[in-house]
Length: 348
Ligand code: KG4
Ligand code: ZN
Image (tube, rainbow, N blue to C red; front, top):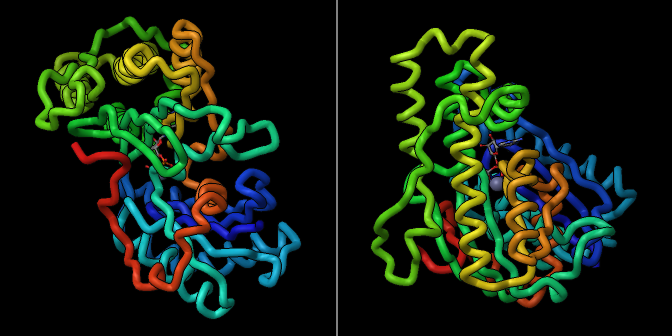
């Protein structure tokens, strides 16, 4: 069955058509980076206005690119959380209206579950049933968590950040280093020829969490590394010069990626699973991909990584997951609303 997916949880407007949960027939992504760049971060008001302006043409282009008509579409899926309320509202309301007018089922999709589903997109991707149980590392601008996945609708939260997300820490670090926005890709580029041992920034060990079922050793804390960079720059402003800037960027990135890889490795040992996945925007990072690959092979585990174009926000992961959620598409779904604070697995 062909699903139309719509994603507007933050600052990307995306629509995609995916067949049988795997074959991406078309995926259009309109990025708002240029509009938010002058402000150094996402401005919710600008994001939602831009979604309103471009979503109709993004959907039309997706249908044209795939050569698909409305009659060939089985259902309409859209992200209903988590994310920015005013952004989620645009895509989810559009999906509701389209589903009603085209007489199709509506399928609400959890953005975090969709990020992990991205590993199942494309002709070389594994089949979900062949890789369960799976350890998932989700690393984006808003979330950082380790999740055990037993089925596509059964998730257990093993650990998560107690403050900033990994992508958020990279974005804030980039701002302190005057590198621009969004930080992750620029820090990666700047760090390419830098020395990751130039400064040892803290790895953010978490000692206590209130939830009894969560192991603090599988949790993350990234606010300290950002503060540490801030004070380091106060002491050594001269290191912002071109000669040492790559070393600073590499050291900062290393602290964040090292923390991710160490917790990932520990979670692999604790769960003993044979398959792992990584999704979310930070999963584009080549150094992270190589660290996780090493950790997985040391733990006799196969790592499945989404293609970089499906790591950052996109609607293909939404349309793909929707294929496995067709039971949920009843009339009652139309009364469902967006949920900006939607979680995955159990709450901390
Ligand atoms: O998944 P995503 O597109 O949006 C959210 O759901 O948050 O992730 C965006 C985050 C941003 O923080 C961005 O800096 C980071 O992903 N990111 C990267 C890279 N590309 C994007 N971080 C590190 N290296 C990259 N190459
Ligand atoms: Zn995302």
